[in-house]
View 1: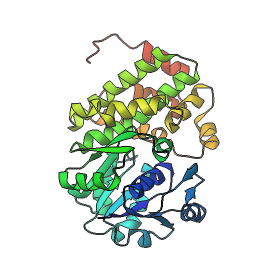
View 2 (view 1 turned 90 degrees about the horizontal axis):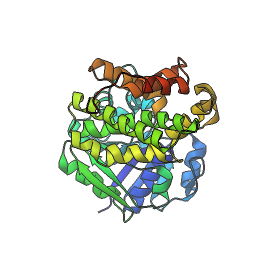
View 3 (view 1 turned 90 degrees about the vertical axis):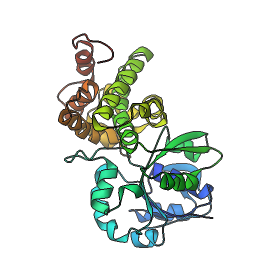
Length: 333
């Protein structure tokens, strides 16, 4: 039976996920902030975010959130993480009471250090057993091009996770269910910050040894933070941990990797932001993840170094020097 889904957000990942749901047989109604993008989607494409991709039948879009949410069995939130609270304050009264609410967002809220599922529960009044997190090595353009990929659908309630997984499974998109919402969200958020560091290394002309070192030690930081917050350590060895980390750190399609690369080439944060049109979540979330680490007594030197670059306190080269001259210790610490 077809699932009726609402996807709030018409960016690249929201559009790619909406297309995946439509290909799976769901009827999808999207909400977009900009009329021009809504018109593009209704004409069968989203040239602003996924040029050259033809969208499947079964998707329509509107600028009216009430219209998009009407009768939805699955509500997918696909807006920049730092805008979720403000958007959700307006959407909360419109959320269908029994719908699964899915987060595609990979960030930690500034000021509160809350994960996106926590913001959804607080602002949307949604029970935790209806909140689902989707995360994995899922670069939007590759998904939209039907390149084979896998992802994780996480929820405290197994039946809800399975319901969402069923609504987005296709011959090229394989979702796995998981109950570790905390670990899945942390993996998705921290990897963006690590990707900024890897991008900086690439921008400075550093090779694969440097990048592999940053990726591996970045994974260790993620796992330490996850352990402090109650995540399952095994999660970070899976698709939403090391899988997403590798894709985001190494792909030219990754916004955070690309943003970092430009920083490594000598551009300022403001200059890169003006040059790019899409959100690099790690630039904002690095501050909140850094604070989360401090609050829980977790040593996160790569995250802290990226924060220093984003604040303009150190250059990328100084960042590398600081990381390489830290006191010697066991790899397991």
